Picture 1 (spheres, one colour):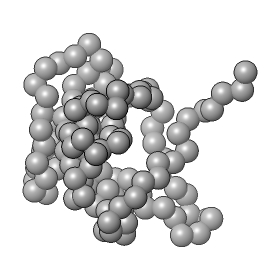
Picture 2 (tube, one colour; picture 1 turned 60 degrees about the vertical axis):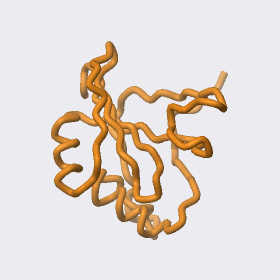
Picture 3 (spheres, one colour; picture 1 turned 30 degrees about the vertical axis):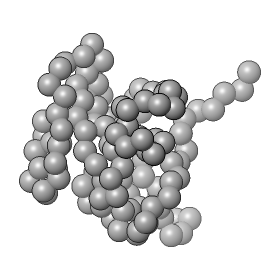
Picture 4 (cartoon, helix red, strand yellow; picture 1 turned 30 degrees about the horizontal axis):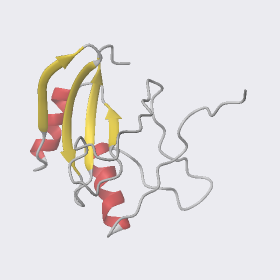
Length: 123
């Protein structure tokens, strides 16, 4: 069976796409979509990726109308949290340490939840 090799993009609606793309680039280092074919797109580090459909009535994402949530891997959750807080972004740390790592949550300017994950064995 032929299988996909990874996620090639994440596409979603935004009230202000340009401002939101700038926020992700400034605070999380996710480069904006290139405007030409010579500029490389954002490259993520190899590592685990969880693909997990949730029950339609989950409250894990926050707002009931929220249909998706991003989870970004980070090497150093404490350093990332400090960087975000210094920029005025509220970071909700999950104080529990799980067998697969540590987590925190932030929200982008449009209220979309973003989970930050420091895997147990960062790469």
